[in-house]
View 1: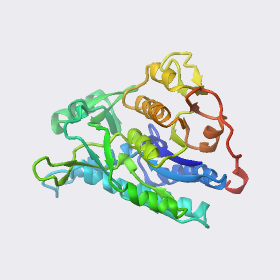
View 2: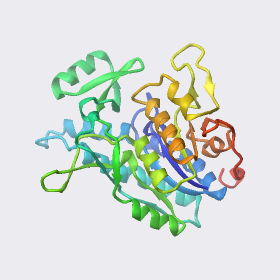
View 3: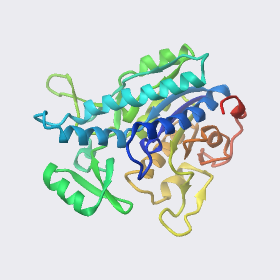
View 4: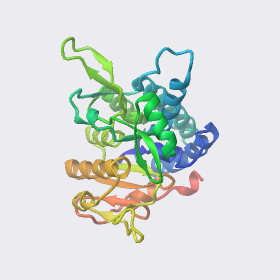
Length: 319
C-alpha cells in the first residue's frame, strides 16, 4: 500500500511540555519507530507533519528580538520549521531503515488570497497563556487568541491548499523507492499576485490536514493516517462518557461535534480523502501507526465503516 502519514505538531510537542529540543527528539524517536513499522511491513511511505508549537515558538522569539525592525513573516518561519522537523525525521528514519533512502523536501503550497480563512483565524500556534497574559499579548502585538482547553492560544488564518508545487518531485522520489518527508506544516503558504502572477508569502499556516489529504489523493495513496496525541476520535467529545470510535464512515465522522482548531480539521481531512478516493483513513496515536492501519488502534475510516485486512506487523525488527 502507498501511505501518507501526517504527524500532528502536538504529537511532537505535547500539551504542557516545554518546547525544548530534547523533548522533541524523544517524540521524534517514538515517531520513527512507528513509521518504520509501516515501511518494514512492505508499504510505501510519505510523511507530513504539523508545526503549530514550533512555528509559534519561532514567532515568539522573532517578536521579542530587539535587533529586528519587524518580526519574521509566518511563511518564512514555516520554512524554518520544515527544515528543523524534516531533519529530525530523516535522521531517525535513516537509523531505522538503513537500506532505504529518506529525503526531506521544503515544500510550498499555493493558497487562494480570497480564502475566507484569512478573515477567521482558527489555527492554534505557540504556547498556552493565562487570560491575563493573553490580554496583554493581544494589546501589545495585535494577536487573536482563543480558548484551548483551560488556557488561551494564539490563532492565525489556516487557508485550504490549492496546489502543492513540489508534487512532481515527490512522485519521482516515490518511484525510486524512497521514503519522503514533505509538506510540513501544510507547506510554505504562497499566494499568486493577480497582476503579476508572481508568488509571494502569506501570513498564515496552511491547513496541514487538508494538505495531507490533497497530497494523498494526488499521489494515488491507498491510505491516509493522521497521527496525533490522542488515542481515538470520540463520539461525545468533552463529555464525561466520550465514547471512542474504532471504525466509522465519513458521514458519521462529519456528524460529530469536534473542536474546530484541532480534531475537526483532522476528521474532515479523513472523511474527504475516503469519499474522494474510496481508500482508507485513520486517526490515532503517534506510536502505533501500523496498529491504526490494522484496526487495533485509533479510529479507522472507510466507506462502509468496516475493518480492513493489511500485511502484518514487523514490530520486532524495529523495537
